[in-house]
Image (cartoon, rainbow, N blue to C red; front, side, top):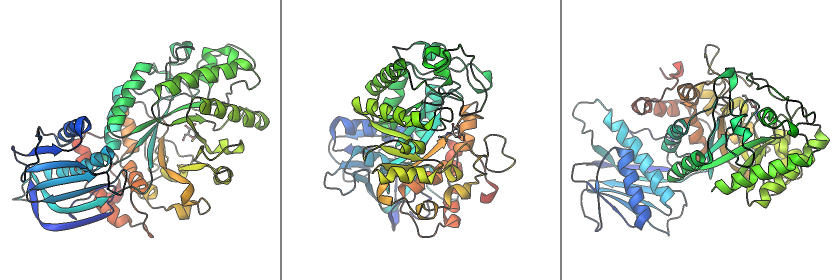
Amino acid sequence: MDRVGIIPAPVEMEESMSSFAFTDGTKIFHNFGADGEEMAAMANELLGKSMSVVEKRPSKNVVALVIDTTFAHNEGYELFVDKNGMEIKAKWPAGILYGLQTLRQMYMQRQVDTTTGTNKEAIPAGRILDYPRFGYRGMMLDIARHFFSPDDIKSLIDKMALYKMNHLHLHLTDDQGWRIEIKSWPKLTTVGGKTEVGGGEGGYLTQEDYLDIQAYAQKRNITIVPEIDMPGHTHAALVSYPELACDTEKREHYTGMRVGFSTLCWKKDVVYQFVDDVIMELADLTTGPYIHIGGDESQVTPMEAYIPFIERAKSIVNKYGKTVVGWDEIAHAKLDNNDVVQWWNNEKNTLMGVEQGTKVIISPAKRIYLDMKYNEDTKLGLKWSGLIEVDKAYNWTLRDLAPNIPESSVLGIESPLWAETTETIDDVEFLVFPRLCGVAEKAWSKEKLKMDWDEYSGRLKMHYPILDKLDVNYYKSPLLD
Ligand code: TNX
């Protein structure tokens, strides 16, 4: 088993001297009813097989998916392989899914192994015990600066799932576009969704699209975290409904890349009615616990207005039963231990949150912003927080980067992809992969005292053929040659 490069690195792995080879007669057994049926179908999908499901567990040639409620780790799993077959044991179906993703990585690597005499259907025997370091392992996709279709979003979900990520934060609104249908304010999308950076045609998710994406994600144990950015980053809303601005002037669409010039008018009742309506509809659609209220770069909202605005937005989110997440600026407001601060830029802000008891999502721009260029020659991306080669996105520890943020406050790690420069999902993939693989490892695997780039990069190299097979347009770093 140690010949295979699993990412994120499992907690424990032992190899034994045999293997199990799939044949046409390999069966799937499970012990968890309708959910088990679904998981068996997922196993076939992930492995590209059509194994039939049997009710009685055979002694040989079987893939057994076993829920054991006494297993110690909620999202963890144990994968056991010997010559008679394999068993994935977990407390939750999510753990079974992660065991399958590990198996899928091993299987795909074997499929492309060109060593003579290898049986491409053979999985090395051994045992893996695995469970995550953090419960929040995420990526953010900005569909406001450029719009990406439900199919694009689903294809990204598939790839996140392979690396055991479990939260997809969708940045749904910004100056350039409003991308989620709100039935009580229809012009947000019919007007505000019409364009994007560069003047392309934009687009938006209907509520039906959103539900469909959410259900697709849920099957892969991924929770959608929707973001409505406010009070800044709201030009598209102001274009749609000028009464939400202090000056009520009619505005033109904005298709550039500047930030920090728009604000909802904090003095107006209609603005709070608007926020209430939007959050009510979104909370109603969303199955996950979080609603992200943005709160970043509100440079034209005076601080004495920003603070009460955020507090009011928070109370609306809480009223609809959801937990607030916001960019680190929101920690200027009064928060409590149900809230979550997303550290992207300012450690001081983040600590103001921690002092109020909030949880923290780690998203440092200088290390894991996926929209930063890899090097000076990278055509896509920005570089305001630096150039981020694949090693720089991996070689950090929480202790080095944020010695004052206690690990007990950390919910997890999320890597954002801002989409100012990415017009297509191929562009997105180029910036996301392979950096996201390393971020997934940081969020899942035990933190090592010293980051071992040599060891990691060896494993990462073994994922190139997997990414090729999945048709991912990834960046081939010269560091891995
Ligand atoms: C800063 S990160 C922003 C975004 C931009 C991004 C570009 C954050 C909370 N705000 O509005 O898209 O930089 O990297």
